[in-house]
Length: 224
Image (cartoon, rainbow, N blue to C red; front, side):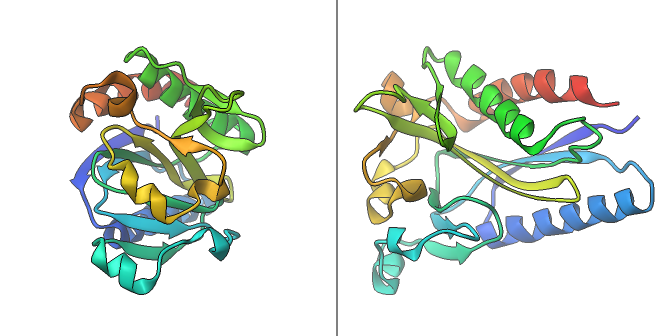
């Protein structure tokens, strides 16, 4: 039986991780086209400072110049996922699931909802109540109030029901880096992290372990 292999890659440059994703994505599609059931994967990692703009993202939400980007030690990529501009950096848990949704009997909306559920269940173990915001993908706190703030961004690409890209959960992220963008296109809502909400800093390894347990419970049970 096929399975979801979890690979913990540690700190990895965005471009290198992007190339790994694309290779695994192509391989899974090719295997599927040949009638085979190759293993699916979840890549867990952390990026150095980087901004990424989704396929249909708006450049008006980028507030940095090339000079500023260089001065803050960040890079920028325009990529093929959905969603607008977002930030990745140290202290953020990144997850890139490379999955065959047909094999998991999932539609795209159901898949994203399960990713959100895995994150909501993870942060609940730190006493943080995660919520959805109507019309927006990701995990929010106090989503229907003026204090609405995002703790996890989600943006995916799906082709032939195979997924790439994924989620970014702020654990101990330097939130100052969000000042240089309108995160996910929003100008009237904030961002937060587990550290900011709890007042202490869990390690990424600890948060990874918790996330893996919830991800496995939600996704592995669907493998046929």
